[in-house]
Amino acid sequence: MKLAAIGDRVWFQMMDDRAVYAGDETHALLYDQEGAYWPKCSALVGPYVQGARAVHPDRAARKWFGDRYELRAGHMTLPARRLALWKPLGSVRRIFYSRRGVGGQKPAGAKQHPFNQSGGFDLSGAKSPVMLYVRGLFLRLELPRWCVVDGRGFARP
Image (cartoon, rainbow, N blue to C red; front, side, top):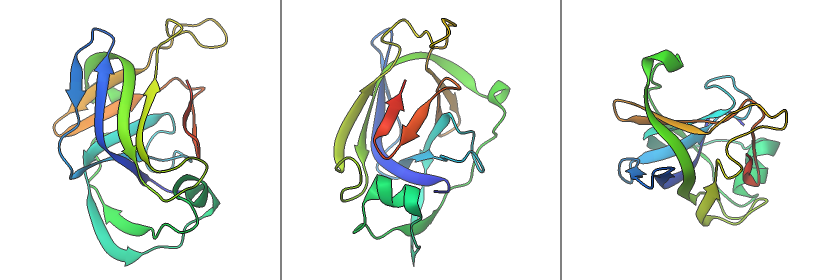
């Protein structure tokens, strides 16, 4: 699965209980499971244009979206990858989003996932909070390097 629009209607509950909303219905939650176009443990939310051209789903895409979902190519102008160019907004308590697809390993629809529940420590005991950053119209969710995002959604942390 390349850089895929896995959801929309995204907002974040921060550790200080602020709500950070990710634009409007034209903004999508994108993730690159292979890390080829965007860092693997980083999710991107920003302006996205859904195209008309159908694309053939690979195995990872079928696990996320389901066999009956008609995938379409889309377009997003990617912001800078270098994290130093982004402004930190803080630690994330929970993400809320609408999952795209018609099945897959989890059904489509409204989803939420908690982060930083164990104080943000990884399995080695190192501090690794899930952080949110902003750059222009984009939000960037930085997950620890041991993250797992797959057909189940945000599986770890």
